[in-house]
Length: 461
Image 1 (cartoon, one colour):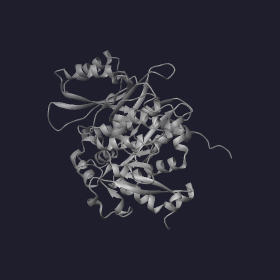
Image 2 (image 1 turned 180 degrees about the horizontal axis):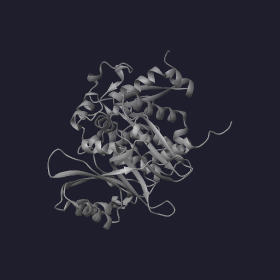
Image 3 (image 1 turned 135 degrees about the vertical axis):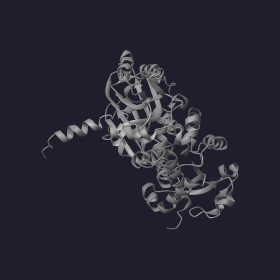
Image 4 (image 1 turned 90 degrees about the horizontal axis):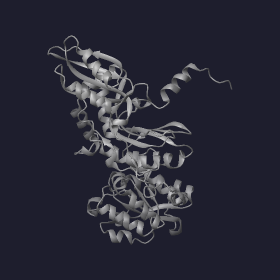
């Protein structure tokens, strides 16, 4: 297809030409006929801002002459109408994003760290400049979760959301749970496959998922969520024996990002926000989300639970979300919707966050107890004194040693009460080490709906 006339083009400035940037350029090149049919105009990359143009001399889907390291020249590109930022990070990248917005240029970004830290001021600047920000790719790669929450689930109050928002951790946990591989081996496999960075701290610490959760929870609950208010626990200390014991009891382990309302008879109240390893029933659809895939469940009062599953990272899934935002801006509807919305981070109050002590849930516990008469009665009494009832208790034999693993599954309990009881249990002379505590996350609607469906006759046509 020959290049369209200038009046049929939409000039795009691309910040970053790494994996995702190359994917964006590829999609814009390979599908330009389709986009032209959809929009009557076609987005064309006019300029690409990179640190060192010499390192991108083998660019395939952009003209090498469009490469520049000069941010001023980038912004002064003739015909520049939209800026796409896929370089990541803050600092200089954030300044270029701000400069673009000040000029009234719409910005499409996949930069979760920038939005989680500076979203309030960036959204205010966009509105003051009659611009807009598209950020679908920032939270879950190719999953359209931002669009679903912001535009598709407005009919009722959202009660909660939870899911797998980091493909690296899910890849590692899949290897640990399905093959029984050690954490270090699974991490090395993730790095070899390109899912984990050489320094994987952002992923395995849970921080990456916490940044995404802060963005999504702000949209879902209409309050501004700071990433620092998300209780965060990574996967590096997760033991294989807990994964095995949990599996024997019907659970799989996932690093879950969770945002849920606490208290308030009308469904309002504070938010409990966390990222941590949790057990989910093997009947829960989340248990079947493996490898680098992401998934999010949103519980909306009008629709009920909806679930979104797909690749949360990778060149084309992320680039696809970026280009979808780009097409929405070019079509005109997104800019109008952005201006009309009053639920962006700068327009809503700061979230009132709840302590994790207030969360009520079922929990998996593993204790190391001395194999002597009466120890179970002592442990049960301490839990009972804290108002915690037991749903299951199992003792596992070991080849040698005075202490044996004891696994307990509780009924729903207040987390603060449970932690106090565990402190008392850890102080006993019949226990050793620090007890392990993992939340058991209950599915919202899906498991029971599936059970009911299997018992119900098919409707007559």
